[in-house]
Length: 358
Length: 103
Image (cartoon, rainbow over all chains, first blue to last red):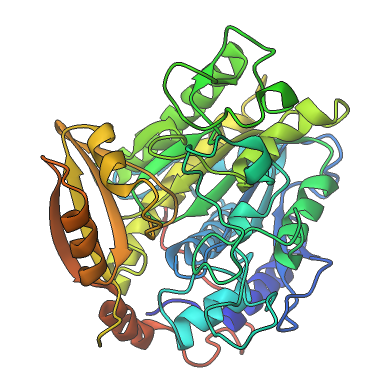
């Protein structure tokens, strides 16, 4: 076996939808990539999904992180096959019963978008293995490095890092179109890949949880990535322009407000995921806030969680980034182990959030 | 190759020591600038030509930060490209099966 190429990912989603018409729906994303690719997501859940809470999982935002798209295709395939056969699922020692699988598919909308950046993945898998960004040329010069935008710095969440963050914060972002890793401009949500994720977030009115799967550390991160969290001063927050130029240093100055109950829920759900990973593989991931060494701006998880603060009518979306595995491109037999542990974590999350009262 | 990017582990007893070395260096921190704990140590992996990190360490004397070259990431990546599907294994419209055991 081998890693899926971008064409295989698309065909996999299409065949899964075709094979499970009652519980799986293929969703065409509205924006083609710079190289003309059409992306798709897969919705798994009851046919009448209006009343169902929604969990969304994305992968493949960063091209060189090969495991996440494969993991998400595997997750969808496992859930659908187990449901169709009336069986449970097992990853290592982590077991899920047939009743749990039935409850997930009947009671939860799961939206899986395995490969957000197919142009980048194709370039990484065929040409430059360490490529990270998408493949849209923004700068007008011919330097091959001056191609691409970091999609996971392009979301509208403190995207304008030069305005919002302290100059000595060392925020992980760049305005240089030739930066090989973290170029963020020309505008928030400028990239078709970013807008596809936003379109998917907008589509589901009962979206409650979002996970962006990346590689690697391994770790489970929750909001915020802007600065260290605090739950005592709600006025000290990302929307308050009086703190522009002060964010991102860590330490005793600015800290980002997060409601205590949200923080508790994030930690509780992260623990559920981590326990399943640990049972499946024999070792767990780090579970912590995503701000560790330096802050990030424009990241998908912070954007998903920030939306209800900015637009009151939007449902709150508790958000995570999971950095799976211990390398960008492990040998395939090792990648299979990472896929199993990640899938165990995600199925455990699905079971937890599809329980009554979630 | 001369410009190959290497996977380099930096290890220290404090985040402050890592920041003292890395602040403003504009290195590739991997997916995100994340530090992991390994016992009493703080660890981050960066991706860079070895010479660049050597220059940085020479320019900034930060005691207690150790550097270990884990692998030539560019070379590993090139080898890993042989483990990517070359055609379309689902072209016959047979749905994928995951790695979970159905029982």
